[in-house]
Length: 271
Length: 352
Image (cartoon, rainbow over all chains, first blue to last red; front, side, top):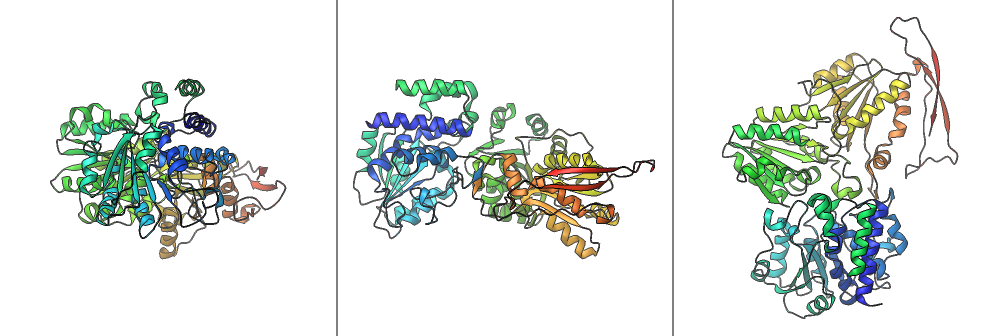
């Protein structure tokens, strides 16, 4: 199956999982779906047989609202049992959710491929720096652009730049949107983001965040510095009609109804 | 909820010293209100940056402003704890922090989003006034109070599912929703709704509960508690918070200090590994064992009233150990009616 076809299937499983669990965060998941797909399938050396190892590449999803996308990508890549998706945000013990309880515990083999459970923004980058410290393996951290408004990110960026941690790659899912509004209307973090990373000692690359080949090419670039990839994306481009119907806040976090689901399915099919 | 907020905006229209600092994600649409659009310099959108929001507000307050910080309860109290502790509480800054989506209200978002320790954390801070309005009228009363009060204040509120009960808000900080003689339920914040259901359930079973909404956990009105202790009424505390530092603990220690001890049942979010996710009713049952509470209250009230003590044993996960559903027949002594003539006995059937 081609990459495009697989991504279509993942998007459908994101929709169905969310619909089944009556939860939202679909556009956030779609926004970085290609990034996650490329990371887990083409870049990071995470396989089923080494998933439970402590020493392997790591992928930290700091923008926790994309958790739904992450578990669906993992299920597609064979790193997570597809049956677990039925338990996404269900009323039960050890259900999958934002927080993905217990992922760091070695005994939890089912979720071994998930590296960090983070339900609040602005934690993943610092945790990623800790994972990358004194480590021959590579650490990839996916952050949202609006998430960079949290100050802790810049403490981590300063640290990684100062120590020239070349095994750290930050991928910014730059969709210029946050729950309430367009990011530049609230606190513009996106403008000059390239320069901001550069002055902290990062090698900065930019590409289209929905282009699988471009993402792969950028992520394979070897550097002696920590790397930041600014991936320009459109949040929920498959269901923008929905934002017009319900507004920003609900679009970000709310669940879809059957009609909206059907429409989005059709749009994905046409892509 | 927003209507009530309009009253704050009206006050701000008149008083140029009132500022708002808005953290992204409180899902209130307040930022697109008329006031916010008209006065962008006094409605400051800081983005996803709780720490900056709180310290910035403290800075404004140090210039004589009254500042409202609006954000999510779980993050305001937890993430910005040190900023609140030093810049706001210790400096006695005139900052009112409003934490929305209190208690377990953010349900499926998981432990990271649950505000189950915010009230307890804030109660520990010097100079801090802590408010937990449970209903819309209390919410309004608290906001009115916040305008008059000079000093730090933390207000946690469940804006997702506000309760519309009509009762007069007592200025002491503890409102009486219903008055009875068998036991007193002391509820706060997002738990008032459930406490009200529980009280009605107990009335159906033939009991006469007093239901209180403690919307001001700090400074706490101990005089009112002392009155209940003098009446020798058992106390049931009801809070969507962890027990450590909670109101249940506070009342228990107050009783011990005063040497006026009555039976107490603390219903709170039980400490656990929180390795679960679910919708609100499911979560409340899982963490607070609500279905067991009526039976536990029955066992709390004196056995001399003719009540059989019911014990329900559960395993570590909270499931019933017994394979079969248990039927406990509780002999309930119907309270004497007002004229004292009608002494009926009722047989109640409780299914677990």
